[in-house]
Length: 473
Ligand SMILES: [Fe+2]
Image (cartoon, rainbow, N blue to C red; front, side, top):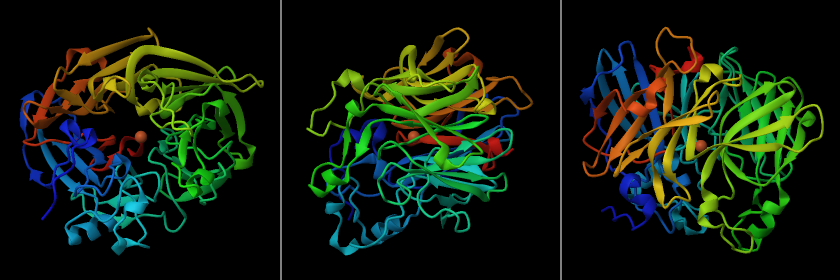
């Protein structure tokens, strides 16, 4: 008999897990779906199958995929957990065996069982494969139609360890570039860089020395460079061995930006110092006039305390769209400039401009860390040409996901397309897929396709034609 979930804000309201998998052939539709918009939105997030053991860390909650297929004017839906090794063992046991926050809370019966990770952070398609990603482990391959788990995927043995949940796709070459943090478990700050060609073969692997062992969640790729933003959220083996929390915020060590020419050996990376600040997600990066501009969502400090246990003031957790600029022609420190006063996270863009100069960024906003509300209540479109953020407010009791952009079929103009997001309507206790005109975010959804249940607040997603990523098309 499954036990109740504990009282925890990350297991309640928009974040509360659901315990069933289902198919729905034809969702009830309000509004009009844009003509010609066909494909599947895949979203993924933590959805622990059972009440967690000990404290709950959503970064290790079992991944669940939600797939909305738009076809012939209808929207169908399917959701499935990713069948990782630990998910299957727990299914058989009827309870949680693996702790999400502290491995010392694992059930003794799984001592020595190697985790395959939670596969809960991002889901992307490349070279005909749909991959569920979580940064501490290799991808898990998913069948694009049925959402069946095919199992861990290591690129034919070329990926020896973990893979970031935020690979980047070069729209010109079809390559997928990605990195791995702590690739060889030496915790010396080195990162690995991989390049998979358009056919999905890993054709390059480089070891990139870094300033210190930090949590690095995302990176950026421009036309000619790979860019790493390393913030001082540092993992210490000494702290771990002393029984203390191994990860701590150490702002006095500053942040760094590493720039590596795409064709160069990893040892040629050049690190530039930057003021301490925390960024989980990059919007985009591009080169102009001998500089690299990196647009990201930055908070003054993360929710992790300092080594002495001091937590940052709540307002420092707020995330703002910010530009970091590295001058490739000298040794100047990285210049930092806030782009918008709107608190926001989950930045996305028209990926046809990925790594290039661009105009628009799309974000989830109005909520999130430091605001007193863990959920986001709106989406925004930031326009670099005007410096303005246009916002649609979803309203009280409405929690909205990261918006995923897809171009209007046949268009080539940046930003001409649609945003797809899920909205959880708390009073209705149900979620919908919402489709927006990306050029007029502030006017609200063009269409909503309703489920009878909640899509728990998740992390990231991709839109593609039957599992093919846009970058793949
Ligand atoms: Fe992420």
